[in-house]
Image (cartoon, rainbow, N blue to C red; front, side, top):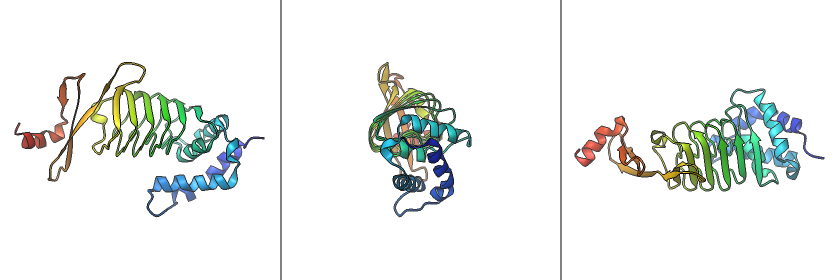
Length: 234
């Protein structure tokens, strides 16, 4: 007999405020919340019985109670599930969905902020638009977005790949790490997005020029134009 979706949803709801207030040394609030739920589920359920259909049912229950559901406990369930590939369909913009992801996750529907935050490996494919901070702090794996994104894409990512069908270069993070970002989808036409980072010891601190060979031009945000003029004597 499998684990009841109702029981999982009830446990998440009962511990919502405790999880949000969880504080662990050396971890951010989101990371502490993830670890809180991970410990809670391990103590409460036989994790090998939590499969994709159960997780989908839990998500439906949580969507009925929130306009912007918390994806952190769902991310824990996805990673702890015995299934390597999981398909889910969503109706609302979940936050932090795919956090610490290690599976092959396919999502139908628009996703909220922090998709794939702290992602470790595997792949997340989204058929729809996503919010801000997609791929933030990811260290490995691949995110494929068949749609548009918000701002700060790839914030402090240290590895992995992000592929975006409708990428606007101005949405790239000003604090981008070593990961790779592509405009387009792996199976179709795509271009690598290369980034030149300019550091100036001033109040502005960091500035970026975004460019790729398809545009054959340099994109310069208005707010850093004056910095470039001083650096390159334009």
